[in-house]
Length: 180
Image (cartoon, rainbow, N blue to C red; front, side):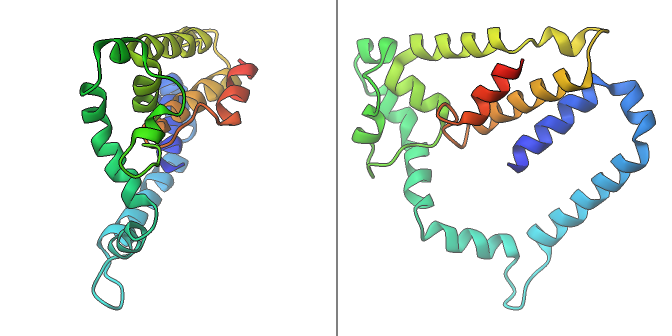
């Protein structure tokens, strides 16, 4: 969610570069300062036992289901390369990655999962579909409105989140695409 928010803010800031920075200069300075303070607190400020909040949360999360997911994310490219040429090109079907992964869990990476299950052809087709449904030209045109820019920014944020989460089953993505 944080990564999505950063992408949205960057896209909106780029789309409305001149007027955005003039109108919201104080708000942007306050937001940047808040982010800096939050990063210092989360990553650098030690807690009572000497570890930072980030270290503590990472240590406790690795004990849970995140460890197999991170391992799957690391091994997914190797599994893709070790397949037959036909499976690399056209894939091996839905849920096949999860069935063949070392821990039986998904990689939680939309693009690696599509590449494994639908192959190179499937990945190209889904990226082409998402590109065609997202009117990126609107960001560069002079006749843009804030609602369209926000929708495009949100879609791009969700697509970036696809690196860490399987987004194809998210209603959020498809509802945003429907609004455009």
